[in-house]
View (cartoon, rainbow, N blue to C red):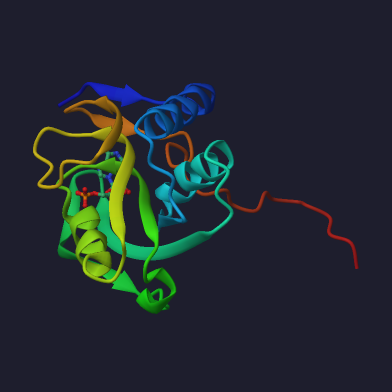
Length: 164
Ligand code: 5GP
């Protein structure tokens, strides 16, 4: 589809506070926020401040290779977090979007059985997601432009003078 859901950094600020409020209103107080790199790191950082949680972990997952093009399955990249660190803890998985939901399912299954409670929070959830996240800011079926990935990586400009 041609239509895009366009999230600005400003709207993201509002979204992450509203998402945190939903979690607080539900009475969920995570001991650990597990962010899914890279997009989930922004969400996790915002939620960590808003929920006053200082215990942040990160997992790297490779799945998308382009707009709508994926590997057959998401894969967790090294270093994989030690689930022993999560035992008896209430874990909140934070990501930018549940699209197919395969990434969140992978991480949810990784935590399940090792933790006291595991829930997921996302800015966006799409209707086809096989994981229904406990906390969702907005439902959409469009491709989303996130402010952190809408522009290509920066490249060094010509003629820059570097210090010795
Ligand atoms: P899933 O495993 O749920 O299909 O996808 C999870 C990851 O794929 C997200 O964390 C995100 O990095 C990427 N992704 C999925 N859908 C979108 C989208 O609509 N826009 C962008 N920019 N990334 C997406």
